[in-house]
Length: 601
Image (cartoon, rainbow, N blue to C red; front, side, top):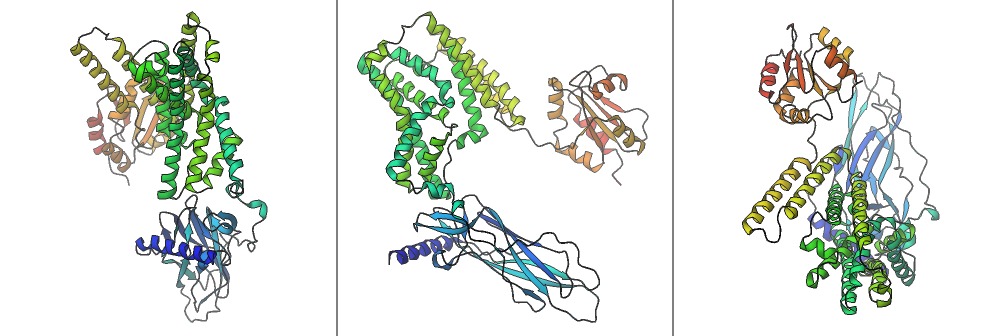
């Protein structure tokens, strides 16, 4: 009775979701927000009485699946691929791939499913057609797709419509080579193929929660959190000089920062499960280039603080030098930062604990994630609540200043390591911005003092903000898409083009040349110029002269008699001498010459 009730509620939820569905798509490609379905023919054409097949390709969004078996699918909602009943083409039963085993938490059992990218094959045989005409025949085939598409947290039963394709039947041409071969019939999945999440779901609750606590403890010895450990040590040293009550309160504030980060993870996990039907993966934020860059820049700023470049309220509170509420705020912030830096580490125990949490219902998953944070925070709570341990910490002195500046260099190394994880095209931009940001931070705090007039403070800090914003706008955006298809410098390639009376445009540049970068943005990033180059069939050559022995460097001096870069040279068919530009703003002149070229034949 309970199973029937569960299935009934499941079906109600499916059809409730699909009450918002739009009209069904149709054609040779069906695309929704969760799946793309396409059809491919085994042969470009077939002959009467020949055999062939259609391949139906499915591309499912991550963490979604179709039910594979009518025996285990709730309410018979397994994937169905229905071929039409045609007179000229006779279809056999569809050939499905081997299914996978999936543990459905809502039904409490393992089910056979299809997920990821897979293909269903429809074999067919062409009838022995007799006709007096030798012309080809075209048969339109419409394939029906049915079935519930589900994630771990919601299901949909879309109206996919018909997937259609045209089968050409030829009478006088021999059938060609097959584009694919049919696989063997699908076999039931082996027990050892059960997914890791399914196996993890079988752990006992108490064992898994204990595992989560141990995973949090392990974060304190993992390399990911090492960059912030010196800052924590400095904070503990400062706390050792304070009263027991203040020391304990500061330690608890630090632990609160750790728990606050894991609370954010738990909240993000809830949002992703409810609204997007997916789960949060450990360290996902470090796959986001913007997050990586922000963390790297934060470490650069902290390094500047270690070098005493600035001493403003919030950074001072982070290091434990400020008292009162600011000190507590800094302790929370440092705890949060320590937890953030720990997230890329995914050793076995941590990965197992987090994966188990993803296989549970939301309340239990939230408890498990928060227990990871508790495990990480416990050592700091114990250390700061035991005055005997704090008294063993050496007194501040010259060693503290040396240690502090050493940590500044360590933070810079970690920042560079983070920036190295950025896409190569964005790496240099962030490095330039880091330098400008460092200057702006120094300008903000170092150019004015406590006794500086308010008006002067406002002017200096306003200029610092404007400079930082301008640098961000210049260096942080991703590079624009290249509008011109440049070829590397090749003297033979240039010579062949000139022999064929084809116009040639050569841009001599170098990586160390700032003016060349300006030319690239002011001239060759213009869409109207790129369109003219395409229309006039201009061969565009990027001549790199970064190093002395590059072919373009030799040609710049020995062939074109130019002293340096930037220089652009346009060879016009019929003209004895090319047109040369050595400045920066020659876009309009180049455009005029391009317009005067004969159109491409």
